[in-house]
Image (cartoon, rainbow over all chains, first blue to last red):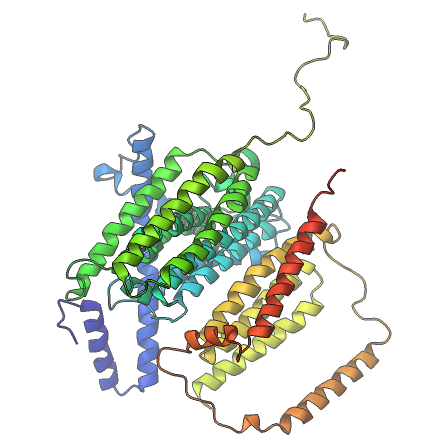
Length: 404
Length: 171
């Protein structure tokens, strides 16, 4: 047991446990209360954290687009999200006629829950984590399946064609991008020999970004696609689908989707820094677990900055380009790098530095080959289906009414 | 009755009820959503048995795949996806009889099985041993043949799907 200033959360948990046991509660009931409290606090902090994220992202996007961003409410506009939040709380809920009530109302809840589910298995420091599940990584993948379901429920339940089309697109996109994501997640599993997230962090004496850069790249791209943000925001492409699956939502129900999107963007940064940048690891993180929280925070914000840069600077894909990128580039690249990682890593297991160097070289070779050869093949021009008809140009034979 | 047993009974009742709803729901979309709930209940049963790997796989494979199933349902069925005809035909008593007969037979067979009375083996600290499970799937003395057969079957299904879906090549 570490002293309180090194590991406060577990200290408080142990103290609460003795207090509750002192009141004569059964050990099972004490466990239940502590788990409930832990889950509640984690979920609450996660959702409150979104208030800051919204301000941060709007400010950054503003800077990228040569604007100030929010700057009226409080210093640097930092209280702007609070004003927005209060506004969205008092707005009216509109349920469209013919909506399928239960799926319609379940979808926003499910979309936030599927993101918060990931927080249950992320180790924030060496000792603070929801559950040290031995299949933590699979739980992360499973939560992706739930978010697909949420989008589809929203699309179906709204009784709106645009919402339905948005839902269809979402399923096509999210399920396709799940393939390279799962395959690229297998590479940290091979290198660390475990599916538990904390074990993966502990195995990163050399961060997996160095030993598996291809997997990191694929995971990053496909998880941005999973979060459904620009440049992968075809799900709610406003120029084509009004607002996609959340067209018919208003008030806090829309707010839930909004929260889910921002939380998802932050969560993928958290995941990336946990799985590929060494998570809470850093100097003295094992003696002072609270330092690990700081390290994880810094790494996460570096990644989150890149995610926002992605959103701010890249235009939206067309749907065929998006599918080409996934099936013709990312998936083969993930499969090849999985096989090569397994072949290179296994014989050199006893020599960690040689293994890291060999893996880095192999990954660089994969990247060069795919970028140089396959990348060019994927980005070829596609033939247009049918000849374009110049609808706006009047036919010369047509009788033209004379302008008065 | 311990808390775990109560939880099991609740989950079991929920799973069975939603399984019934799968076949009685009028809209095919609702049937698919009830199927999600039923499969989620099975995942919860796995979780209460501390088989976390199977619980999570249940969610990944089934609930993830349901979304595709729903899309197919929407694309392949009638416009409103709502059937208004009667849900049973003339011979439903015979079907019920056959089902009850099979159920009785299964209950009789299982009640003669000794497996219910042997104590469950304790699960080692930190959940089930995934390494052992993986090695059993790939070792010749384990389950390598069924595992590979299943893989080949899936590859064949993939190739077939691509062949069916692909445009016919011009000669």
